[in-house]
Image 1: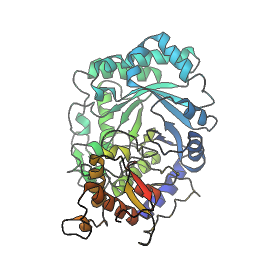
Image 2: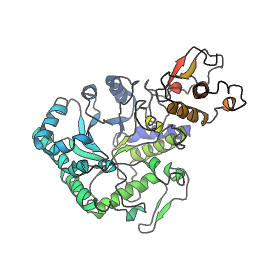
Image 3: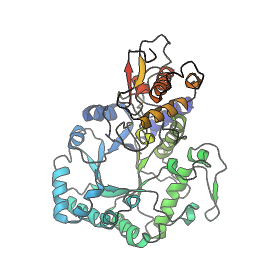
Image 4: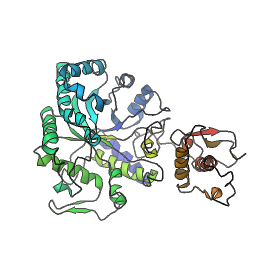
Length: 437
């Protein structure tokens, strides 16, 4: 597998001159490097030529000035209704765009995030009017080079079916998607989707199909196309639904796609191996420009999710582990994202058991998180938790904190005693005090 992605890395360099790839830069974490360091790293050491933000953070926008890296900013869902007013939209552009562009190369304003998924009628009904107002405001400010779009989750279709039969949801096809796509066609902006095979309801049955691994595929008898991976199927389904409304000529951009590296017992497919397989193949496919069965040789502007793990993100543990780089800017795994001549660090080997460092839970960690850490660590290959089973040498004291500390420390030792192997979503800490004494 490593050799395959070294080859991918070489191929990516050959295609980067014509086809770029971007990354989502989320900052819901307390351990990330300063934006200026991130900007320099992306510019000098990676193949990324664009970033997408989940806000319009002025510190980040300043950091990317004069880097040549394109930046997309995002309007919060809650701001959508107010931005239907053109005066408010012009004020937003004056506050969030004018002070930075063109020194910072702002490319898109993404209005809201997955608004249909929110089921909030106020956001949904006002999305297209807000997009029109912001487009008007950009033109008035002289920023015709900045486009307006909005990223959509893939709950936008009627039902799961073969790509050639896919259609947008009844009730939203004509009232929502038709005017939205008309706006994109008129303004020459892309329709942005967030394809996540990881969240497919059929992931248990179709894991290999999602991961680009050998599988029987899905045959579309109407187009006589065979699909060997879920990503191509999702993209062609999107195209077919757009074409059915008369907008097959609108460009499609990928706002987010990725795969998590870890989670708790409820996320069995969130593993490093799966993340390498999915992200490595998607990056190869996007950058190669080969397109899909229904859109051959078509390129898709793509933003991988995500640059970093985010240890302060709410929700299930898996939400914190979508990153591809550590806070020290070393790759969590290598799928060819570093430029030629920039090599990934050698994976750490387990340190000797005589180490004086230990990984333990922080004092304020909840029982729920302790149990999640325990389940995660003991569920990983190579981690032996039998000593904390009844009758085991380390069963006593029989407390959740003691058992979680054993599991976390065992994981930490097995993974090479790096700082990151004791992170546990920000709930672990390294100490010189032996927890067993």
